[in-house]
Length: 74
Ligand SMILES: [Zn+2]
Image (cartoon, protein in one colour):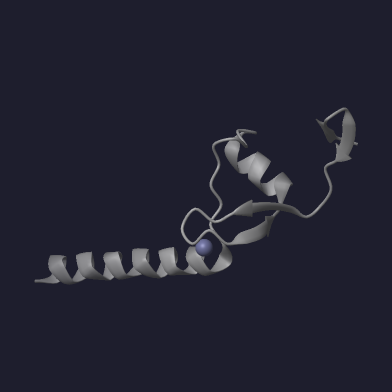
């Protein structure tokens, strides 16, 4: 078991762990194992977007790629 210490008290780290979305600020649960693997354990500097913002970003990227395709076809 892992825990953090706050004023001498053991606070167990249990699922779900929450973070805030850097885009909209909403609190959302994250899979700590996933995040740890993806970031090599650098949890302090990691930013995890919420589901809605992840979708928005994916759509924006898709839109940007479509834009590029149009340009190359001209
Ligand atoms: Zn968000």
